[in-house]
Length: 318
Image (cartoon, rainbow, N blue to C red; front, side, top):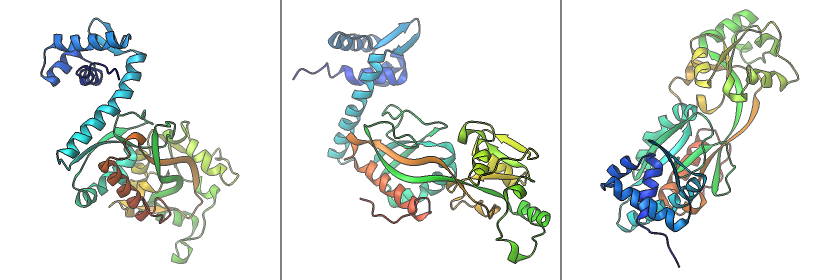
């Protein structure tokens, strides 16, 4: 078996990650010329250029990016195996997660993870869009993207949207509709009645203006009336904050209101919900399925999703 120059592999990974020969040299405590020598030796062995150099600008070639994806996983597995053999129990994991999911659902639960699994050292990488599934980005992901066959996936949540408003605004709606008696509180509210109030819309859900409310009305064969006043926000967190401060009715999902201290500030209106078509998964590289830290985190996430009502089943976690 002919192997590449093994000393060059961590050097290549460091240069690619830091996008700098000098920073890689500093991290590895070697000279910059030594780093350059190792990269040149590796490129000679592979017969491929791994980096494009233009002045002070350094970028990976397509071949370099492909090679990095392949060896990063192998280097991480060597590191994990060595730590396990040395008796290092702590598992350091980088989890890439959507900002709203992190802020409203995951972060409030992290003290419980630390209590139950103190050996899992979790670092969060915030994501506003679907990240590329790669060891270079994170060790594991909460994502709606199941596009990579190299990864395994565990369902956490199937997203649905439903209308909410603040407690004070709910009283305003009830007075407007003449439903101030407690027994009237649970009576369904029509789409036409909803449209009489400001609709707080999140652009990022369906990637178009008022797309969330259009889908909600369309679910029951209706369209947004011309008279409706729609206020636009780029993110659900912003729309939900506007609703909390009595500015109208927002569409939100289950994890945004799941066991948060301010969840009681909101009222879920007695209306229908609409599925967005997105399902949230915990994703990890199949080749790393034997790592104890990943499996501990997976089981904890699934248990929390079931207990909080996100995942509506009680299937055993294997």
